[in-house]
Amino acid sequence: MAFINLLRFVVTVSALTVACSQTLANGNYHIKNVRDGSFAHSLSGVTPPTLISFRNFSSAEAINFLWRVSKNVGDSGFTFINVGSGNTAAVTNQEGAQINGFPNITTQFAIESAGNEDFVIKSPNVDLLWAVISDINFKFGPELVPFLEPATGGNEEKFQFIAV
Image 1: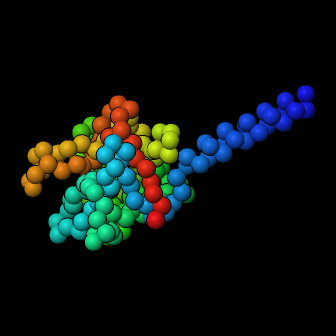
Image 2: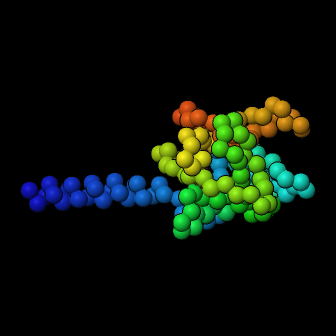
Image 3: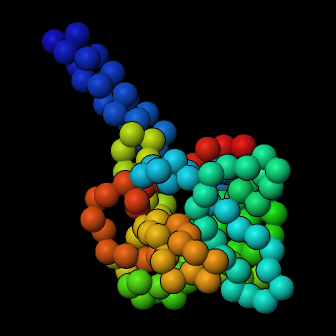
């Protein structure tokens, strides 16, 4: 009987450890889209909004791939600040809205585990997720950009946060 109770305890602690390891801590991250392995990127812009896109990592502009992700006590979600541009990720809570960079507008996002070290980024209080989609109407040609979309379970809406 004591062995069975010990076994139950070990299984419970193991499950809690896995659950807790899927919680994101405040820090600096590269944000990788699971679908194609591209990384969130933002450039400084003269006029907001500035484009947030997902592209192959480039060491020449590494600072523009670095994001400070933080949640303060009392916040409803996480804030994403691009270290290179200083702009924050912001969006309206509408289906199909594009996430862009702004110097003085902030949106807080929920970050939830999707299993396998993957996460989804949600708009709080709305069932919409970041989804990386090709924007064929982008003025310089197709670009992979994040939009708020309903959940589909696809890899375009799953992300890995790689601590830097």
